[in-house]
Length: 386
Image (cartoon, rainbow, N blue to C red; front, side):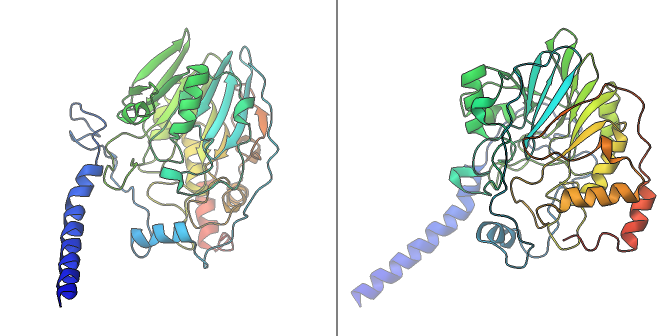
């Protein structure tokens, strides 16, 4: 009887402790990354999308169930390769003048070399995109070995999700090269946890890098979180790097939202090169976009809004984050470009580790016919893509 009473008491205290944890732990795990005045996208405590907070992952069932399937697997989803062969490239030390060379390192990590400046976007060299060694693992090694990176001058960090903000990589870059790291409000606090300084700007903020070269932090449509309870305590963003030979645009991670933000970025000057995400858009069969991730159809619309620059499709082929098959994003983009009668030469994928010389600003390619894309979708032209 005594043992039974002790067991029941232990069970009762366990229930009490779990109940306390349910109320205390979320507040403990919450973080205040930024304090500042209320604005059109900050309510004094949390950031939000001013065009409407449709930043959810649209899915059936619970978010917990989704996370369980991401961690432990889902036999109903299209298979992915366990490993994709990558031949790492060795970029030059510098690219001078108005010449521009772009190398896709994987996911949202792009090396842009121009004007004697080496720019790196959302650098991730870790094997997993998550905390404490958990999270999606790489199926493709980085397209440039870390030791093969030229000296980096400027790093753009779009937001604090683990597949975009890799503190271990940022620490290595800072210790080796001391680059200027530009991000949006609140993310400097997160990066600072790794002992790395960063310049955090609001949407519309600009930072001079060199004479004639500036970084502008620009709007996109997404959300932020490192834990479950610190959601939207820091701001997400895209970027425009203003350069003498034509601007560079990095979309970061984004949904379409109101679709007006690409034109806002193009308003800062003609965009010569753009890195635009096309993957991690499908969380249910047949889905073409989620609130916070664009797919190939919306990527074409973003490309149009930017002024149809030379562009690289990113955010696919490295970490499995959603339900679509490994190569669905580039294959669907190609199919939609054909349907839209759009020249794919200006918006075509590279292999991880691939490099391309970006042409000078010149005549624009034809506008994509988005009405034709939607008509093709209505006729089931893209239904075969899983």
